[in-house]
Length: 118
Image: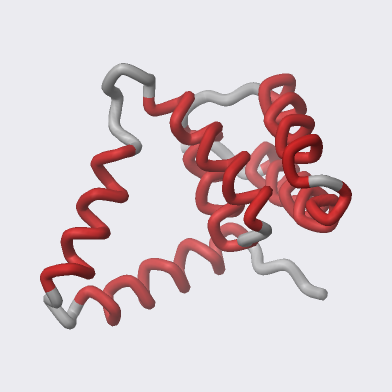
């Protein structure tokens, strides 16, 4: 199985979201607004919420969601030690079936860490 690069993932996600959101259907729009709003700083900081999202996405075995939350976590300043703990929690909660997803997440993290910063 070939893993998409982070750049390919971001490009595809943006293009497909634009197509989806052209519908202007109120419930689709509302859901996207709620999704965006939930991850903002509030009682829990955005960083914590992204880490929670990464655990949930791993347990649910959604590679697109994992990649999305990996990118967001890096942008929020999640450290490698924190990623190790996130992966450990996901593994304990989700069981060994999450291991292939953790492997791909580790590859994504390596790519994100090796990307030049602007």
